[in-house]
Image (cartoon, rainbow, N blue to C red; front, side, top):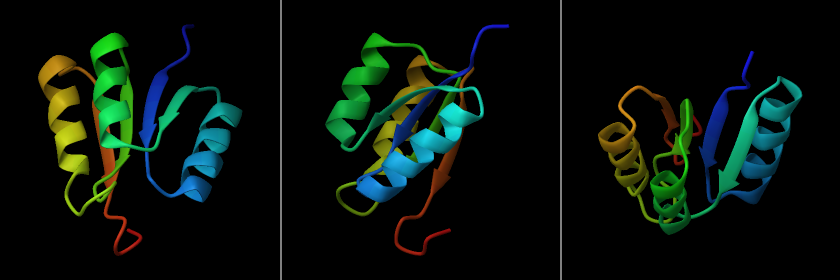
Length: 88
């Protein structure tokens, strides 16, 4: 079976590194980026099954731009997000 591709977006290096490591240990093919610009460029070039994004990457609410871009270009992908301010 083909490995699921995950785009992980977070500006907190510890979350980005640990999240990517955990996902890889569980069999996912992970691309991890720390900025909205990198996420948008990656979405334009690659296909993903799942997006995991901090909603407050960079500035509060900027993660919604990433979620919207993926939903618009890859509507079949699953999006999971967290509010980086509350840690939820």
